[in-house]
Amino acid sequence: MPASTCACQGDHMILQTDEPNNKNRDDSMRNRVNTDDVEVRFEPHSKWRLLYHFDLPEWLRGNPFLSYHHRPPMPSFGFCFRSIFKVHSETGNIWTHLIGFLAFVCITMYVFLRPITNTAPFPRDWQEKLVFGSFFACGILCLGFSWIFHTVHCHSVAVSRIFRR
Image (cartoon, rainbow, N blue to C red; front, side, top):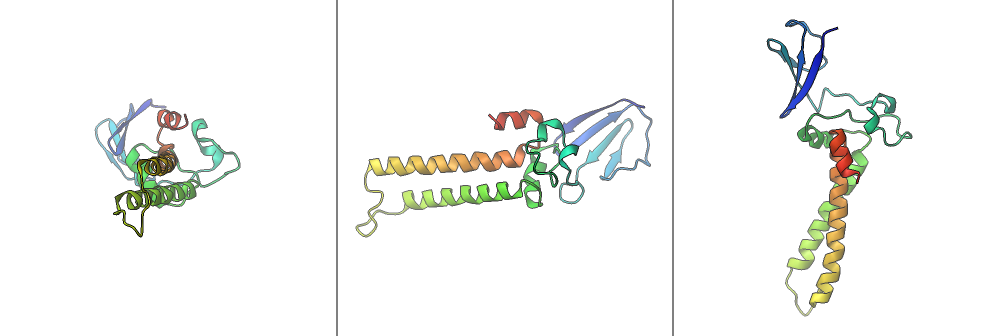
């Protein structure tokens, strides 16, 4: 069996093999064959398939009760962010936290950027601004980091470890 190595470059993966140039390679993804390199371009919206829990690499097996609809490891952040438009086991977490994040950002901007009048005196002084600003900042940070984690944790072991801290 020929040896092979794999490396990511931008939005595609380079698979280097010791086997001779083979133009009849049967891949489920579109590929382009050069001399000794096989360049595989991933099609995130149509070609990657959802996996069972036991098909996942060990580092992606978080919840054994979710047995199907898992995203495979993605070779780039672009693929991770484009995968939010497909239905999979993280779709609910991603979209509820993203919508909550955007709602908190909009409410914060409304509260702190609107003019203070006699009919709308809130927030009146710096103490009210500090309390509500802290609340909104914590909500924005919590929901923002959460939707980013659920989006990119399938990228690699290192990225998953960083966000699980």
